Image (tube, rainbow, N blue to C red; front, top):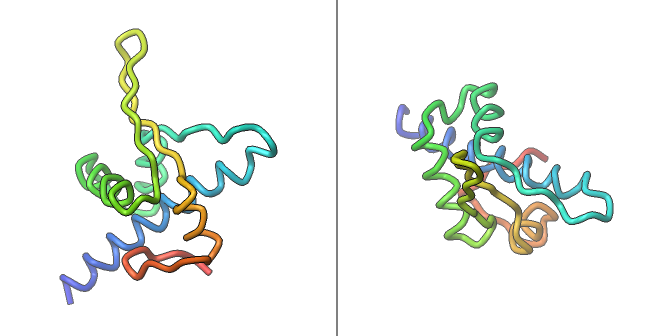
Length: 108
């Protein structure tokens, strides 16, 4: 039961990340979508009680990158570091329902 809960929580974490990145793309209204800082994603996930550690969130972002759903870019400007995340075409297909992935829990 504990293992199932952990798996469901990880799947939900991935789904929330995808939904946030999809929302940014949807509100871009003709302009290129802005990448989302991983700090923002972590704040949103913490509000859901998920991914309370940076390592867990980073692991899920890497998982989504390996699946081809997100693009990650480490940036540094004036000493400030950021991990920027954005949806790829494959990620958009997943969010549009063109493909499915049983390892990501998305809201209907």
